[in-house]
Image (cartoon, rainbow over all chains, first blue to last red; front, side, top):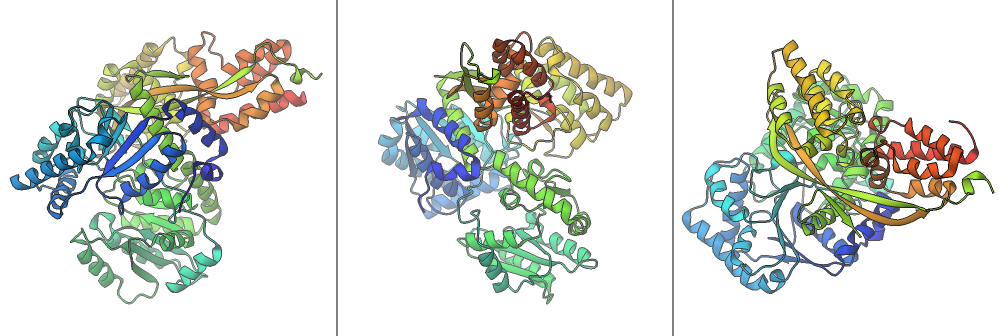
Length: 412
Length: 226
């Protein structure tokens, strides 16, 4: 679906679009290249698929390049990904050589596009070594790290640090995710796209049809958790919370997750959840394909409350999505969830299944409080976490880099 | 001609402000570390945590008027300290160093009162940030008070930040830009400026502040006293 900048005016406000156009004026005609390692699948590709056309709408010459890796290369970068998040694992010497070789070859292929670009955003570790293979580059090169590298497995960080240190700047989703480097580290929170299938408004009839297909009773409250079947998302804790709350309320539970072929633990966790759910007709464990965005959207909209009871979390965009749909969220005190959930305002932070159960009871007995939270949550996302804010921060960063990092920049 | 339709000698030029946030790579797990870092970070970081944070993506938890108060309440769970920090008004301070000294004094006082100071859980540390600000002209202009009132709701929160918050720290009189311009309208403008001065931006989100400014200007247009 092709979406233009002006289409965002209804969700974000026309004044926000006007400001983007003004802010982008000095950047018109400038070449901006984003590089990552996949055109489909994953949050980075989802964001770039929208961000790059919007930059072009604003008059920039924005491009999105993808490096071509081998199966072995992706195995190595998956190891990097896990190690950067603290898992004690490291590629072999051969793996490191493959990583470097793919970057060298990609630099040869993409060189003409990258060397003359005025702004280059390299997303995540996969293409990070492009920089060292393009000595004649002239633009501002920024490493955009989407993962939490605050506590990396040191041997892997020791390998990657000299690769990312020569960048002019790096960007993280949260200050807590950053790693000390000899260049400025910018903080740009991620965003959701209000016009994507996952977040766009749906007709009530579509929401009802999806709920009916999954045998949800339309007359009773529903608690939904959307997340991969991963121990860190604590689906068993959610089930325990439901069981405690269920003693007091006729609540239904939906645990919905996508298939994750790169996660060998996923099947085991799913099996454990199914076993724990037993034959309770009010527990719905749903495994949906990765492109079931509209269905997820409908289930979130059908929810009375949303849970994200993670024990460890990145930014927690499922919380953002739920708040945007006007749902109070009961969330674990982890990662970016604590930035989004403010007790009594947008939901509740909890530390235990018992705490989650209490908050389910608390909220389901207070429809007026739910209504107030619903409005606050949606306004919070509108003001802070829509794609338009993300774009504005990219533009601001580019202008700041152009100005040599000055604290105050006057754009004329 | 009603007073509010009288043109000003110079039109009001609506400007906007956008922030980009930089991590200093410094953090505090407890009150002692907060005290040490407060003394060490650049003054711009203190400013960021007091008022630039209004423009940062975050929940408008205006119960605590700055990041230090919010963190001590929500993460450190020290209510007395949060209360004391929340009443520190940067507009009462001569400059950012004076503001820094006041915050440090309050933290030291608390450390002396209660030497127990536990670490917050991992991931809940106070992380010091600073901002880079980009200012730009929106192209919008107002020649009369009525035009100011009509245009203001169509401006961004960044514009309200620039003219109503940032301006106080640019102006030796601690005056917002709208008021400075309104003073060109004589007694009528002076009266509106006085009412704008009573809007406490530290208590509200920027969009709420914008609504309050608009209400004052609407009162001015109708000749009512708010």
